[in-house]
Amino acid sequence: MKIVVCIKQVPDTTEVKIDPETKTLVREGVESITNPFDEFAIEEGLLTKEKYGGEVHVITMGPPQAKEVLKNAYAVGSDYVYLISDRAFAGADTWATAYTLSAAIKKIGDFDLVICGKQAIDGDTAQVGPGIATQLNIPQLTYVDKVVEIDPDNKKIKVERLLEDGKEVVEASLPALITVVKDINEPRLPSLFGIKKAAKLDIPTWTADDLPVDKDKLGLKGSPTEVINVFSPEVRGGGEILEGEIPEVVSTLVEKLMDMKIIQ
Image (cartoon, rainbow, N blue to C red; front, side, top):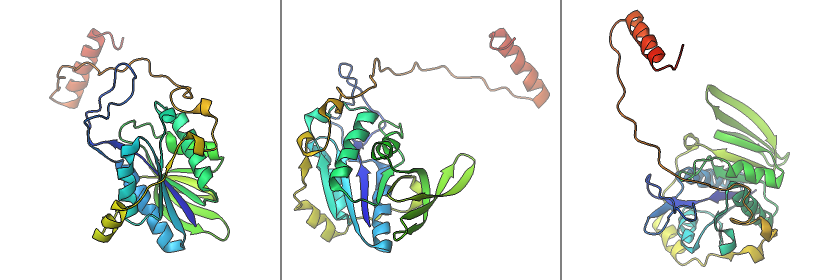
């Protein structure tokens, strides 16, 4: 099987800052890490390879510094890694990002399974994985917490999906894309040999000229959505805790809501 895993380098902080001019993330001076959900995607790719055979290809789109997360992916056992980097990709929204990554996957070619983390912690949109599947015109299985079975010969995959009120088991044809949650596995740590091997790796970089893309659909220019304004919500004052018996509390709450004209 040929397995492609999409990962992202994200700021190692919950205090994400936005450039007021470009409306994009400020990454300078902020330590970066592999998106935590993508660690589980890498591990699932490795487990799939170990069970069914094949090779694991890991890709990321970002600035040159994103090579560090690819080195980590290589150190734990991925077979191939690729950096998708070009000024033309800067400012891409989720649609343009999915378009670019899908082009990179097409360049890799003959894939059976694409694995993504369920979302990135900097944007929290959970849109890129499904967007890639749409661009590739393949089935998408999101919020997967268990790969039940893969049948390479008959090109089938069966997974368990995590829902708000339970779980469901679904089947799809291959090639397919899955997005995984943290319950799916326990990511492994790199060996000393893997770290040394990754340190010497010459990571290939693919630019816009290397991909089968329409350059008008890349980056900020190719993004159909636009960030108009970014702001932090106002800090709210402390609330009030109503105490007493339930009938008394309900009556008091109703009166307060009526006084505030929230209900009539």
